[in-house]
Structure formats: structure tokens, C-alpha cells
Length: 360
Ligand SMILES: [Zn+2]
Image 1 (cartoon, rainbow, N blue to C red):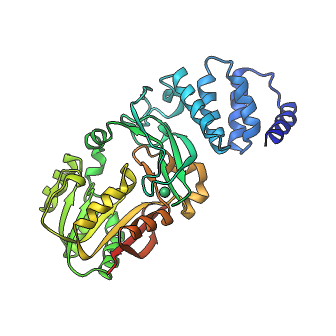
Image 2: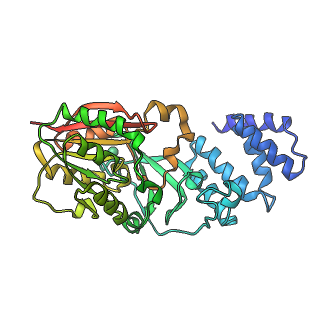
Image 3: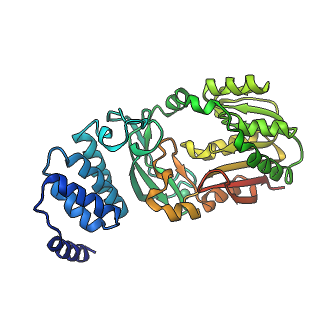
């Protein structure tokens, strides 16, 4: 491997004219990286590390290259160095209307996880991403995310996340999400129809109602609905609009005597540091023939496999887990559930949808 790299650098450095102005070198490197010539681009970016103005941007790009090279520690080092040299680097990385344009780098107190949160298996570094370019405002997270892979259950999880995670989640949320997207109703109604075919009973709980599209559709299809959302403004909005109970509480602290026939977990489990605890809690709140519907991004989806490091999911700061069908199926099986249906989401690229029923 090392020999190979040296060969590449020897060959390519003779082809590259490095005797140019820093601006010209930068443009050349950007062109090279766009055309997929990482080894050549790397040489040019490294040359720019001597230039005070361009060094932070060059480190940023080198971080991306080392991620593709699978040298994850080096990628993390470069990404961090970029921000340490220029705390306001995003002013030069994203457009002025981007939510992170005015972001200023600050170190975050973090929890470090090395053991798989699903199976307690050993893990290895998988990738490292600078999440600042993601199109969502970054609150209280370290913009540099290392992902780890557990080979035992084929699961990917965040190595690092903020200590005050719950506080961040309950205090954030975009006002844009308060308005329901009525264009989703038709897709969601086919999901509810699908659930109808495996469930008896109509008591439905949705965890994380967001703007309330799913719970609206379920109510319209004659389910007796209850909702939860950790963000008070979301819970109140949906409760008032639909006239149904929506509680603003973390599901782990939610107490009820009611048993549900269906629990909806739409894009929820990937946000939790311990998804298994949530599934155990759901299991306790379900009838003996109850079902759980889960939608979550799948890192082995056709979409993710096609997009590779361009897949936006790698840069979603609030996601702490990235499931495969194998890891999800495995955890459900261990908790006494059987997957009855497995589909590709019709509205989220790269997400999967699973209906799991308690084994009788
Ligand atoms: Zn695992």
C-alpha cells in the first residue's frame, strides 16, 4: 500500500505544475478533486498548507480525502485542524444563506462510544465527516463526526456525541416543521393500509410526531391516536390542530396504563444513543399481538451505496446510529419480534420501512 502511494506521488508530482500562485493551485486542486483525482489533489492541497490563508480550507479537503482513503484518524485530525486554524471557516465553505454560515467552532464536551450500542460487540473506525456542510443548523454538536462499524451485527454508530444530548434535542427544532406537508398524506396512507393488514386493534401511538402528518393520516383512517414529541412546541401544535393527546415527554419517562396495538417510530431510532432501550420500552407498551412500524436510514440501501461519501446521512449531526437491515432485524428478533414487511421508503432517499410483530 505504502509503495503504491509513493509510486502515485512520484508519477503525478512530475505531471503537476506546482510552481503557480496559491489561488491557481487551489483552483487546480478543486478541479482535480471534482474529477475524482484524489491522489493528485492531495499533493496540491499539501503544498497549500504553507499558505496561511488557504491552509484551513486545504486541511478541510485533506480530511475528506483521507476519509475516502479510510485513514479515519488522519481524516479527523485534518478536519479538526481546519477549524482550529479558522474558527469561522464556514464563512468560506458555505453560501451566505446556509444555516451554518455564521457558525463558530468551539470544542464540545462529548461522550465517547466504542462498543456497539445494539449488540455490545467490538467495533472499528468506519469513517469521519465534517458535518458543517449539512443543510441543518448545528446546535451544540462537534461538527466532526467519527462513525464506527460493528461487524458482528453490521451496524454503524457515532463514536462521539455531546454530553447534554437530551437538552439539545428538547430545545431545538425548526419552525418550518410545524406546518404539515399535505403532499405526504397519500404515501403515509399506504403505510397505514400496510399496517392494517398485519394488526388487529386500533390504538396507535406515534413517538416523535413532528408536524403531525402520520398521526393525522392515522386519525383519518380511524385509529385512536396518541402522540409524543420531546419538543413542547411540536407536541402542542399537533395536539391543538388535531384535538388528540400529544405529550411532550421523553418516551423513556412516559407512563400510561394503555396498551397500544401499533407504535409508530418514524425516523426516531437513529436519534437515540441507546435504541434498544427504546424498543424494550415500546415492547412493554404493546398488546401481545402489537406491531411496531419503524422507518430509519439504511446504510446498505441502493441509495447509500450509490452516493458513497456524498450520502447526506453521514453528515446528519442528530443521528447517532446508522442501521442496516441486518442490524435492525437482529435487534428486533432478540426482543421477540418478527419482521413482517420490509420496504424502501417512498419519501426518504435511502430509508427503509419495517413492520415487526411480536412473535406469538
Ligand atoms: Zn453490533
